[in-house]
Image 1 (cartoon, rainbow, N blue to C red):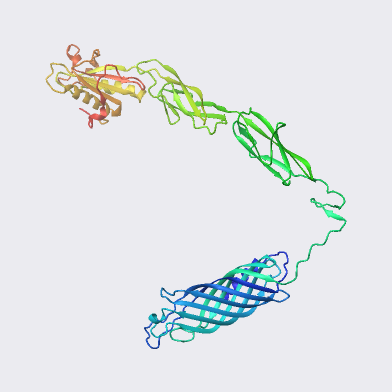
Image 2 (cartoon, one colour; image 1 turned 135 degrees about the vertical axis):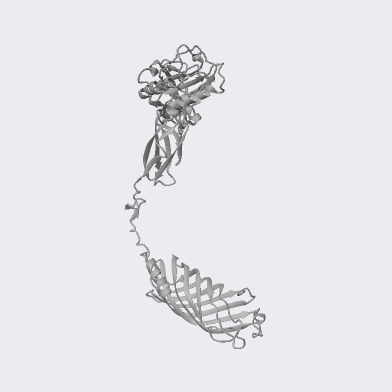
Length: 581
């Protein structure tokens, strides 16, 4: 009952105002029916384990109805007959036929309108027949068939939609279908709660006829525009409604513009199209083709005329544009950079009638382009020690669907003058010794430190040498290692210059053409100075001292290494950990 009331409420919400319809006195209905029969379950008194279930099943069939309506239209009386058939149940060859015959009242909720919901309660009888397959399935049923008649009830709701004065469409009638058919095996009375759906067509008869429209006065008539004139007088011409609109107001040469014509004119109306006053076409449809047409603005006009219509005209303008290749500008920011720096490139291109413009690509007369940036690395001439200024041309190129365009700008690259390396006194060593004496430490600690205090980004170059008559192997490498330790070890009296800023080389007996610049440090033996250990002093009269040395340079930031320097590395590769004594 709860579901029935919900369905009834939904039908009432569907009711909406419509034009009044006559109430038919008699209705006949024929339609398709779908029925869901719920099975029964009864235990056998002979053998409780014997399965006597009749499972639920669906059946298809048809329904016939006869409806007699009262004059008021809200109440009718219904005779309902339906038959439903199923060829098998639960996978067994059981042929089942059920027939119902019911009578009862129907309440219409909107009978005088086009959409008619209703509710009804019908009572009567139900007949069922089951044949085939029963004897093997149920041994108790020896005949293989059974029939039964019992009480039946239909209660539900439905909807009629009036299509014509004599025809209505029924999209659905949903009913609770109650039966009391016996179990075909045990012959015991049961109650079944079933469901029935039906839909089809109803035919309507009788009822009052719609009132005819009032007759026109014999002496007048109604014209198409609604005016009333005497029959002896012709109707006046009607003003034609005419409007014109192009699909686009601006096009490129070669494109076609369809026009949309809006009018209330009849089929006998003729239309004349013109472009800038020159007739070009007739008919309701027109397309303005611009192939071979000069750029400019064109007036498209249509004039309409016909019998019973006052002539009318409408116009619209279309602008035709010519193709223009991409043009634009390119900028570099900054426009002046130092050698090795980068400049960001940007461009803006516009065009006309060539389709979308693709992103610009860049080229440079020198250097390279990386991700829309100009990279000046490698432009400066390393052999030049004077300041250089180079002007690089940047070209941006953009393409559309037809051609391309380009724009240029310049970037000035400034290359600073290279500072020359500063030669410091040579650190000298006694014969067959690699120990840095006090004189050498003074040169390395005092003079190198003063240069680094003024230019922390500079570099120190140490090149170790040995005389041909020295007997100790590897003296050149050990001398340059000890000299590097004095300025990088960072403990005791040693300096802590970063090892990565100390360049070391050991050409050995090859003096590489570097002149002798001795540092004899005579002051190191004066009063107050740390005296040299025995055998460690190198005297000015030692003519072979120029071969037993470490040549020392200081290279300012941005300066170039000495040209005489051959294979070299940094002191970081020496893994120095202690300050030499």
